[in-house]
Length: 288
Ligand code: BEZ
Ligand code: FE
Image 1: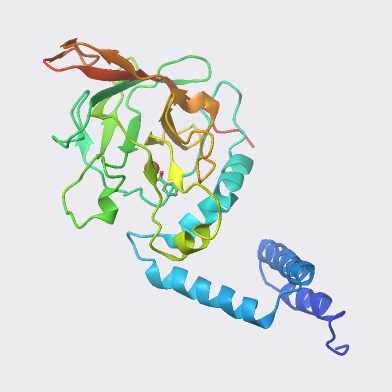
Image 2 (image 1 turned 120 degrees about the vertical axis):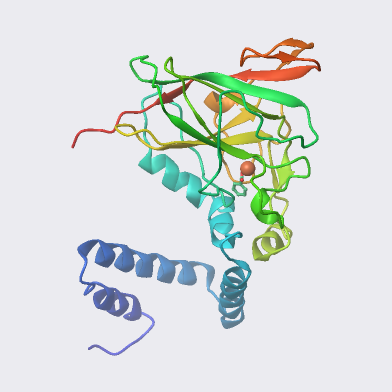
């Protein structure tokens, strides 16, 4: 082995990692070594800064658990999550675009019927989100499951609170004609968790740490790309500065205000309510 110097270390480290048994791991690790070394050279990383960075990573791991995914949050605010989503979901222009999953999805939400209320009496403006799930040819998809979740009026997700019951999350199944109807409360913009290492870092910048009002959707239909996305309220604050870069214009939807009367699920409301109409268009899985 040649002597280890500032000039040879990168090549030596890359050679070692190129021995990874899986060729893809070898490719990823050698590239990571090259970029890390280039980064350290470019910013002339000091030992104190290196130690701070290690402590920050340590704290990010320490605060993380099944309910709090601080590394995902870090990836989100760095724009890395959205970059990875966009590279891996290059859908047709007519298909509903994908965005970040975020750290607050829970797998086992309860199944609710057409138009059933997932807000379960929580305070807020009643909102119906309704439309059709269809494919790129316009064919409605029956039996598609929409996994839906959102934050409460304080910007908190169920997984951030000490509650056992499902709260502001549910799975809805499309009817024979592909239609769905979610009854919830109007979402509000909220701050990402700022009490951890990510918040600590953001607090030292001018970055807005808010997300615009949104509802999350995950739709997984065989033969189609799994769609993870959100709908955002038109005119909401922070649409232009979303801290996780998740907004796409195609996902911004108007919320129409209604007086008491018939609702999109065929029922009747005795109080004023909002509606948002959106058709989800799924991208077929590409044949290899
Ligand atoms: C969310 O919308 O749930 C979210 C996404 C990314 C980071 C933080 C929150
Ligand atoms: Fe959210």
